[in-house]
Image 1 (cartoon, rainbow, N blue to C red):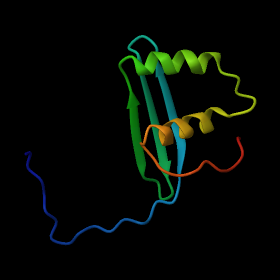
Image 2: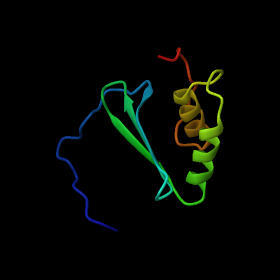
Image 3: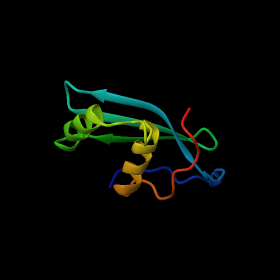
Length: 94
């Protein structure tokens, strides 16, 4: 196991109650999707799709009708479906 630093005084972080899509990168050439989310207090969470999953998602997204579900909602719903996050999507698209 790698080394780690045991803090003398543990850091306490504010509770994160929501995540918003901050950046989406579709790297068609390398078959990679990178999603960066921002939390309630400015925390950053990055999730990467690669392998055969990323091109399949990019093709589906390229053909998607975004009039009923926004791009952000689709991203957040997918992260929930894949077990990356837990919760429900609320709000209206910008």
